[in-house]
Image (tube, rainbow, N blue to C red; front, top):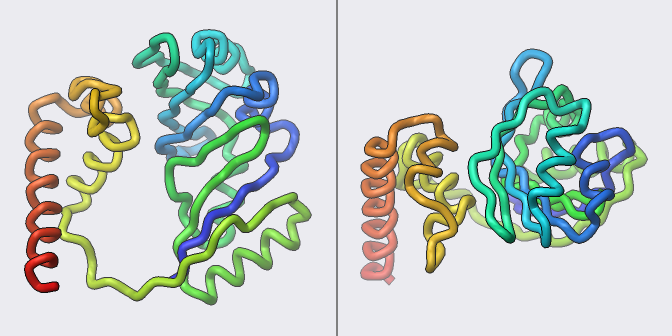
Length: 212
């Protein structure tokens, strides 16, 4: 398998490109997103000197159909929103590659990663070349196939969202309730899932250390 990171100049007309170019010092992180019918449901984080100003610009953009502010302080905000813009997912979907979150957008430029077989990676590169988009290949890492991770899909989802929101930072950047809200489940369920998932990760890590 090949793990690669790209930096892509976003085309004009994308709402996130327009907002990020209006606030070139801000960092917009798309934590997760999924296309549904003719819109996209997304969870995003903004880091800026004045995150409320960026949030206001997102809310006011005509391509953002709905917006819910989950958290905002002096440095960052977290929001759930619906947008009519599906161009990003259409582009990645055409290559048979799923986007790896977070997608990071700064001043109209998006940084993202892909994991693919050599054939899919080469096809993705051909698609980028044919698109005429301006991009850079930042890094390429070849790695061996693995037998699968120790986590269930639900545990992986909970741990991933919690990590992206900063739940494991010291001090924490978000509360368990914020993780639960982002996942649209109750706090007790998230707490138990994170506890079990963390225990499984530690068990595999310590088992592998003993074998080494």
